[in-house]
Length: 81
Image 1 (cartoon, rainbow, N blue to C red):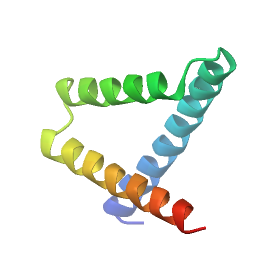
Image 2 (cartoon, one colour; image 1 turned 135 degrees about the vertical axis):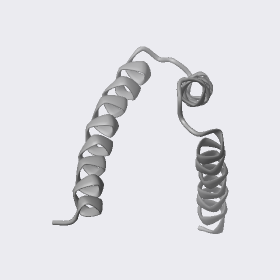
Image 3 (spheres, rainbow, N blue to C red; image 1 turned 180 degrees about the vertical axis):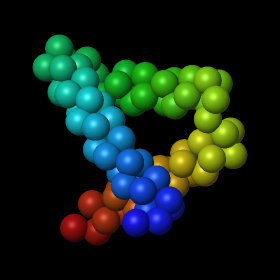
Image 4 (cartoon, rainbow, N blue to C red; image 1 turned 45 degrees about the horizontal axis):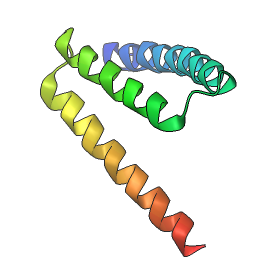
C-alpha cells in the first residue's frame, strides 16, 4: 500500500465516523422538533467555523459550491417526478 492509499483509507474511515456522529446529532435534533431550516443554519455556521479553525478557505468554498449544486440538482430531479 502506498502512502497516498493509506492516507485515503484513513480519510475514508474518518469520514465514515464523522457521518455517523453527525447523523446521530441530526436525528437527535429532529426528535426534539428543531425545524430543518434551523438545523441547516447551524450546519452552515459549523462549516464556517471549520474554516476559521484551520480548514483551507478555498477548499471549504469549493465544498459549499458543490453542496449548492447537489441541492439544486436534487430539487430539479424531485420537481421532474
